[in-house]
Length: 169
Image (cartoon, rainbow, N blue to C red; front, side, top):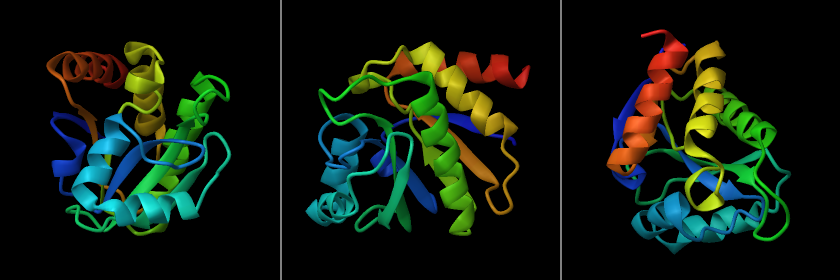
């Protein structure tokens, strides 16, 4: 499927669904989760925690509260802090399950961060390649606008380069 790469704060994006880079506990701490929690309000964290814990690679869906979206899809690409490591499989599974959940909800647009990278510690270019390959091979029914987002200049440039390679641009 076609996808684009954008730069910015995921909490400021407008889409049917935003994906949270979650741990298996679904407790919203720092990074992407912290940005979403601060913009949406504490109810987002409360609802997310009430749906956890989930298995590594699994997702849970909550309301988006004060975000400019209908849903937040909490994708557990990383174990709860101290309970293991992020793996290529957990990133792949979390990405695939996020796309499937958005499609099942009838979403047309989705914003996806670099799951498992950043505060979770997985190498960004390798993680971005996994995510881009999963998105590129997806065949959704309703999703038409999938945006991968990088916050910093460096993150955006890395994701963009990898996306171009995967798409053959």
